[in-house]
Image (cartoon, rainbow, N blue to C red; front, top):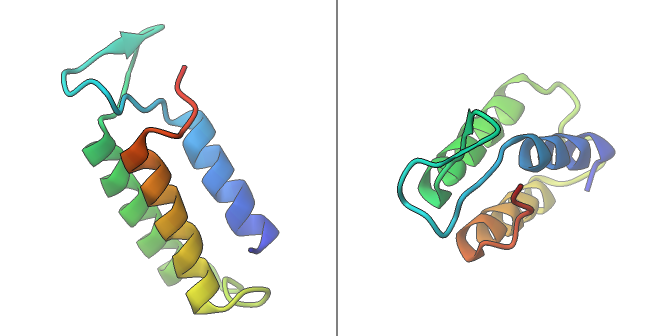
Length: 85
């Protein structure tokens, strides 16, 4: 996996509090938490943006590897294995 994608995914997961066990809106320190569905939607937006805008996205990884990393991230969101505040 490219270092850039790893950095972007890490930043996304670290900077986006995710509440996967609670469907209602919750706040922590004044910020709204995302549900698992909302987090999945954000991952899809991030993936589309990277594909459309990153000029060297496949320089150090294949499209298959890139897709596999996003599939792994989505699985972690669905299963609640992301760091929550």
